[in-house]
Length: 115
Image (cartoon, rainbow, N blue to C red; front, side, top):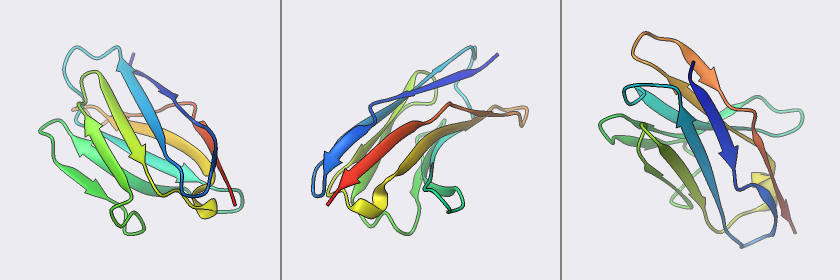
């Protein structure tokens, strides 16, 4: 059973940085892809970015160079967030798909950006 555990959330002032990590376990092979989503109160969950097992990375339109995804889908994927804004406040979730199409979610980590 694949498990995803996020860490690294917290409170930061606007303009600051945070690094989130998503630790994946329980899969013999690298997962097909791992994605970061976020959900602010009252909003729908939106895609922040994703990385595939081959290292292809894609970002949501709002990222605009402020966030960077790295790592690998076998062990740990991180999300480096710079120049944070109050509107980045949300619960950030790790999501993964395996090669059989099964989907997994982490429990989420809160990111709060104060103005």
